[in-house]
Image 1 (cartoon, one colour):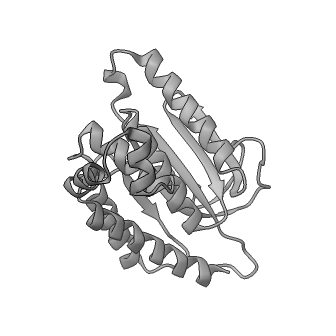
Image 2 (cartoon, rainbow, N blue to C red; image 1 turned 90 degrees about the horizontal axis):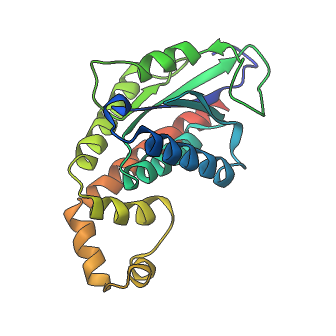
Length: 221
C-alpha cells in the first residue's frame, strides 16, 4: 500500500437471471425501491451512494470493509425476501480521482476494475466475491470467498418463509419475540423456521467475515 493512501471499499451488485424474468417491470421496480431505501438507511456510511449504472447493476463506496459487509448482508437478504437474486463484489480501492458524493460515477483508481472483474466472473456461482488487494494476504481473500460460497449454498436452500424470517433477525435487528408479535405467531414458530434455515451456522459465517473485515480495516488505518 502506498504511504498516505486512503483505502475505500467499493460495493458492486448485479441482478442474476433478470433476462429470464417474466415480469421485468416488477423486477426493476422492486430493485430500484430496495436500492433507494438502502441509500436512505445507510446514508451515514456511504461515501458515494449506491448508484444504478445499468438496468441490472449498481455500485457505491463506503469507508471500511466492515461497513461493506453489513451493507451487502442487508441488501442480499432484502432482495431475497423480495424473490430477487443478486450477486455482489466487495473490493478495496484507492481512488486517483475525487470521491463523487452525489453518484458513484466518473471515479478512477486502483481496485475498481479488479472488483468489477470479480463481480463478472462467470465460473463462480457464489453471491459474494471479494477483492482485497494491496497488503492483504491472498489466502485471506480465498477464505472469505469460501465463506461467501457457504452462505450462498445455505441461502439457496431457504423457502420464502425462511427468507422473510432471516431478513429481520439478521439484518434489521429484530428479536424473535418482536418478530413473532409482528407476524402474529408464537416465538416457538419463529425458532422452528430459524432452525430449519440453519440460522446458527449462517450467522457464525457472517461473524467470521466481520472479524476478517475488522482486522483488515484496522491494518489499513
